[in-house]
Image 1 (cartoon, helix red, strand yellow):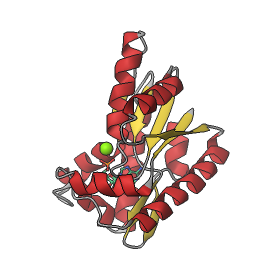
Image 2: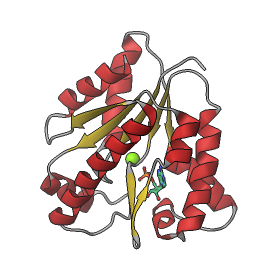
Image 3: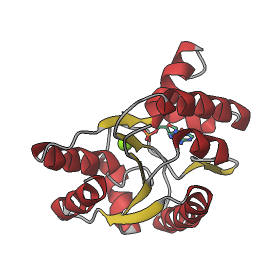
Image 4: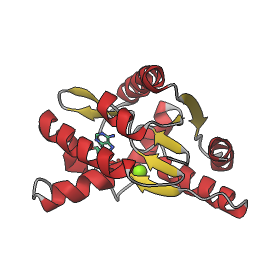
Length: 190
Ligand code: AMP
Ligand code: MG
């Protein structure tokens, strides 16, 4: 199928969606179009319909087998979307029983990304962003645990790259430097 598949990841609160929206505005002016989709929303639509959860932030506490089933259905639906597709998701999801891979082998096989972007910034900046975001039920964790999650995401992204041959791009979304992050992201999408 024609089109580029770019997967955007980053720990909750790092500002993935904000960076993506800014980058999409930039490339649209240049005539480059992407369909921007959110993996969690695909999972949530199914979970809500089946009456498993009421809130998207409850999904990461579901039984692992249920999360995997939702993940697989989302991956299948997303693989049908033609053209350039940008997928906002997670390299790993922090669950009560440990890190769940966001892109296990059967998900990657459906999507076959060209590039995986890791949006990162300093752990204490992420901590502050979570505290001030009242729209979501963000996990309450300290900077050490955020650091561990970011480290884990880099490691697992390397594994994803080995499985698919995709490139891995790290985009830093530092405080007051959204413009730079958006430009780095746009460069991946062009
Ligand atoms: P988000 O809005 O991106 O924070 O996603 C909401 C929720 O969707 C996450 O907390 C996860 O429970 C779930 N989710 C998103 N992407 C994935 C994925 N690739 N694999 C498993 N769960 C995911
Ligand atoms: Mg988001």
